[in-house]
Image (tube, rainbow, N blue to C red; front, side, top):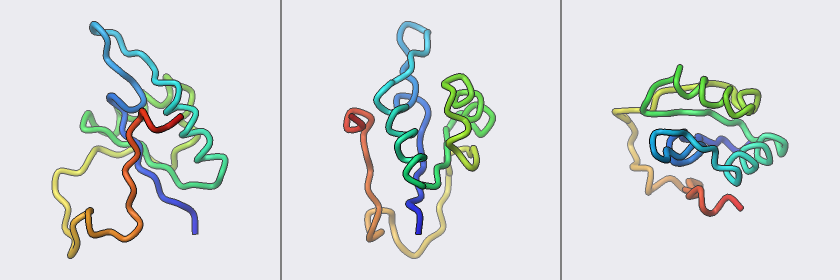
Length: 96
């Protein structure tokens, strides 16, 4: 089964510096590597699905994602994410 990955936009793919968005190259390369290895990737943002898509298009990695989503505001599950057996959180600084 392919690894399922959700990738955030702000401060993960793009960093805001003085009102200008700067790509984060290590994360972008990591997204490509995950895609090339067969992972199923979703791009999401609290800015919404359209913002997530536009950001990925701007970075030239939209083809890596199967869908663009807003970040959830409510989750209904019998487990908290901390209880998920296989969930890992990777900080953008760890994408090298």
